[in-house]
Length: 75
Image (cartoon, rainbow, N blue to C red; front, side, top):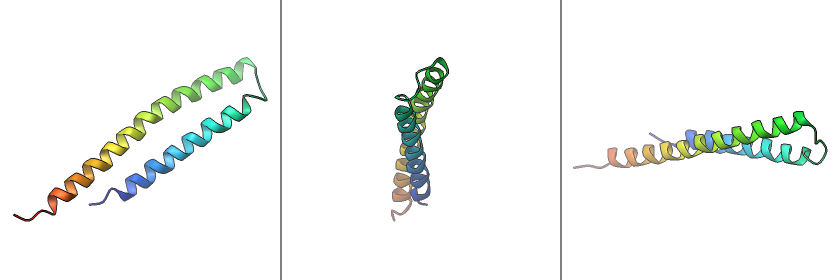
């Protein structure tokens, strides 16, 4: 059992969220209307929820690695 695939997915997800947040940040200098403010607020909510997904993914990977280590022990 290996957590590598999950780790790759979590890393890719984190990169996508960072890119989205960064691009919205860049666009903030171009637009300053009510719709953009609404979009920016929604992106902030997504980023906060995404943080929970990333932390949970990290914990999942850690648990898988610990389980694998225990399962390899010979008594």
